[in-house]
Length: 321
Image: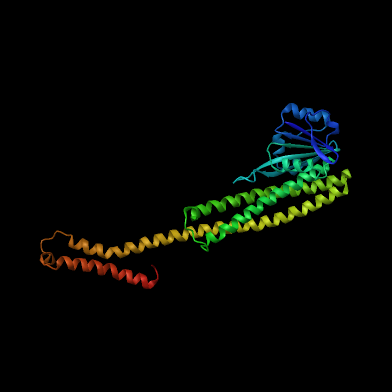
């Protein structure tokens, strides 16, 4: 699908009909078909990368210049409001005053930026201005995600260490282990995206200098790059903390299992003497004098009780119970 935007009166206006691309500021390709790619290529004289080309990880295939157009491909997070955000690649192509974006996902940063630019709250008069606006919005959305993860980790930590009682199945160590693992996975995805955005910002800054774009755009790129570096530092700390909580949760689970095993072991040892007494008096030998006495049965019960009580007192004094 092709969506075309024009800059009119300082606002970003979506066209109802594609028309002539020469006056457009931003051309957004979402899940483009082959004929749509060719249409843009013929209109702007650029090559639109395919989905497989966008997925290549070499820097030379993600950041390059071709026929005067600057190609930048970055990994971004989307569905950040869901339990498990996903990652996808988006390609930004700066060609003259045009920005072409190629994407196969629906990150909320795009419609949020469009709504803001439609009100005139963003610099959208050039392709570079639109790109830095989208770039800033992507960083803002990622920062919101990291803040949510930080809040979740703050809730998990007291539960792991028992500072708040785990009174429900929802707060069991098994559930906490899954939660910590999920937040660690989200953090790892965010780190991957942030690193990719950082590399994009460096290439974008060089492109803005070579293209002699508005100095304000370059200033915003540098400010956004500082935001990314700050965000990456927060994510490194968060990654370390989630790893620590994951190890701590596994340790707590191991400790609880050891306590259970120890309890069963102690109980088995306590029951061994009474079992021995019961086994002796359960033998069917003819000459067992106690069996014929009136106090034989009470004696056996007392022996079993005492033989079980002695190990209990011993273990209690040792602190094993």
